[in-house]
Amino acid sequence: MKRWSRLLFFCVTGCILMLSNFAAAQPQPAQAGLERRIVQTMHTISSNTIFEYVKEMASDKYAGRLTGTEEYNECAEWLISYLKKWKIKPAGDNGTYLQAFPNPYTLIFPGCHAYLHIPGENTVYRKYYHYYDEFIPGSTSGSGEVTAEVVYVGYGITAPELDFDEYKDVDVRGKIVLMEREAPVSTGQERELFLKWRPYSFHQYKLENAVKHGAAGMLYNYGPIGNPNNAYSENFVYTHVGNAVVSDIFAGTGRTQRETVREIQSTLKPQSFATGKTF
Image (cartoon, rainbow, N blue to C red):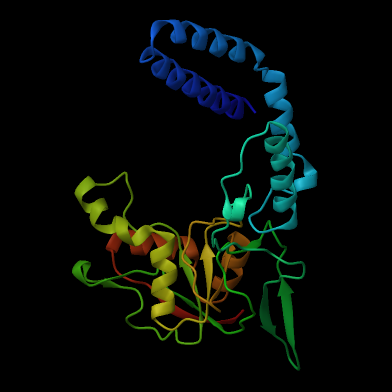
């Protein structure tokens, strides 16, 4: 709340400074009158009033004001009621206070799920993972459902100039790729070396590269947290997963995720492999 108050204070201060500069260019008699009005107006601004505005906008009734939702529109109408009350002239679309523009957004609907197929003697069992603390759908995931074998692709990087391609010896077409975040070279290492790998550490690159290689879905070992900063590809389903999912996929493969990542980092050589697990 302090950050909001500070932001609003800066906005108000900026307006006052602009008005002061404007006043300085006016004839002296008009300047004195304008300065008085500015001071009078400034003293009418109450931090308590500003707090109440912010409190209202942050209330549960508007559910976070997600773009495109009814709650967002309701909050906008609440703000408009004040603009009308203050007799501020509308300057939006068709004489309104609103200006519409296209902006994609994601909604996660009840019923989303992630599960591992575990073959039994005469059937296939499903191990479901718990939404939000073991997995969470990617904020830019496409809609739909995908079931396929999981292929581990390390950091999901194809970098010919670095002689490093984690898709080279595996076929991920129609499969689900499991990949790590960041890159095998970190900021704690030589700066010039890190800068060569940095472009391949971004979420957008990783997702787009998976799509480019024909993957049908992606498990991103980013921890079960949401992150809107990613690319979008229609019908490409991806989800953030944590240790529970990753450990189960590696189980029985003769490898562990930790040792595999260490091997990639120490040798800068891909360690991609088909896990044989269906997800």
